Amino acid sequence: MSLKVVILAAGKGTRMKSAMPKVLHRVAHKPMVEHVIDAASNLGARSTILVVGHGADQVRETVTRDVQYVEQTEQLGTGHAVQQAVPLLDADDTVLIAYGDVPLTKPETLETLIAEVTDSNLTLLSVHMDDPTGYGRIVRDTRGNLLGIVEQKDATGEQLKITEVNTGIFAARASVLGELLGKIDNNNAQNEYYLTDVFGLAVEQGMTVSTHHPQHLWETSGVNSRLQLAELERIYQRNQADKLMTAGVTLRDPDRIDVRGELSVGQDSMIDINCLFEGNVTIGENVSIGPNCIISNSTIAANTVIKANTVIEDSSVGSGCTIGPFARLRPGAELMENAHIGNFVEIKKSVINKGSKVNHLSYVGDTIVGEKVNIGAGTITCNYDGANKHKTVIEDGVFIGSCTQLVAPVTVRENAVIGAGSTITKEVAANQLAFTRAPVKTIDNWPRPVKK
Ligand code: UD1
Ligand code: CA
Image 1 (cartoon, protein in one colour):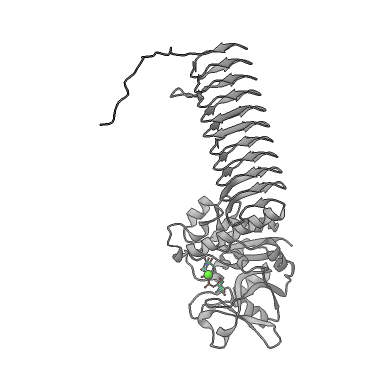
Image 2 (spheres, rainbow, N blue to C red):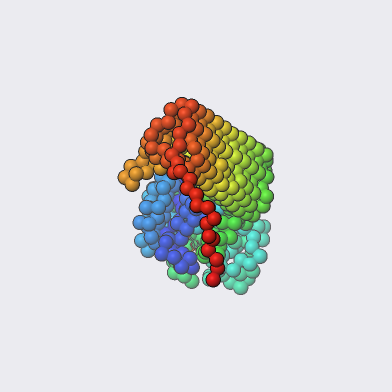
């Protein structure tokens, strides 16, 4: 037996009021449909089939996962949509039906459905809703056995009172599904081929339908509007926050953190409010992250302190570093242990070795900074000549006075000292003092201007 997952993603999503197909709208910056595809691959699906229709080309261009596509050119109903995928199924496959606009179903929930599928049993995810309006109702006999599903528009007054509804998510043997789909018609209030009709037909043929409920209602919530998209975004983020706290991370406010990617954080680390993590971020133990930080695709080692309003992108930070407030590490910044990067400092494509300090108002780009270097306030590496980038090398133990410009390519050798306000255009030898400095001129008793 192998599992195939069919994801319906042909709908337009009129209520999104968008030129973009609904399933491409994002939760945690990932298109909704990719959340569903990833859940399918977590289940070990042999293949995932996306039924596309509205905006099919846009879906194909945007989705980065390996899936098979089938096109439903006319949206004639959910049953018709699944029929398009039938030719890609093998008779003994177990098929899971999912929806590109229902992004938060947990793999464990889907697992229970798949586990119970047999040649004579279909498994369905249903939920009880206080207000079931709009949903297909689960009709049962007096002993509680499922008889079928009736859509809102086809239901009798009595059936409309049923609060157990169809989530649409179910699993069946491919041979069974294919056969049942061959029998559905569109003789109903909406003249659509209802996927839900397969359940009544199955029961008529002596099969059974077992139902499961998800642990949380939001697992089967679909998105029809941007309001619902925002609600699911909050639920997703709160789940990420809960996972972090469970793993031993302190969050100053679990409702004010956003994770848009894969974040792993070591024990006893603390994240203050309004931080955003993007892509793959790995943070070690006992790290402290101040408020309003943005960290993307980076690694932060243990015991580092990142202060408020720091932005770190495609960088790696060693242990025991101090960064910020208001610091910016751009792609290729590599800080070794105990480095200090202070306020209004920008580091790009540079290595800052052990114990070195760039504490105030500096730009360091395309540079290798040795160990125990001190770079004074306002120092700039002039790495760009308008056409090309050039390298700066600052060796161990160098002291660079404030407001120095290092015009690359240039090297400052070990333990050299650069006087404040210098423009360095050639190599400085080890242990030298180098400075460029205009002489100080003075005029005595200078008359200060007076306000008129
Ligand atoms: C469907 C179910 C209903 C269930 C509800 C849960 C049917 C007949 N009804 O109703 O029992 O309670 O979902 O949300 O299945 N789609 C296609 N092609 C089509 C039609 C739909 O790909 O031709 C896709 C839509 O894009 C959407 C999904 O299938 O993602 C469900 O379609 P929708 O029209 O929203 O079904 P409902 O009327 O809500
Ligand atoms: Ca719907």
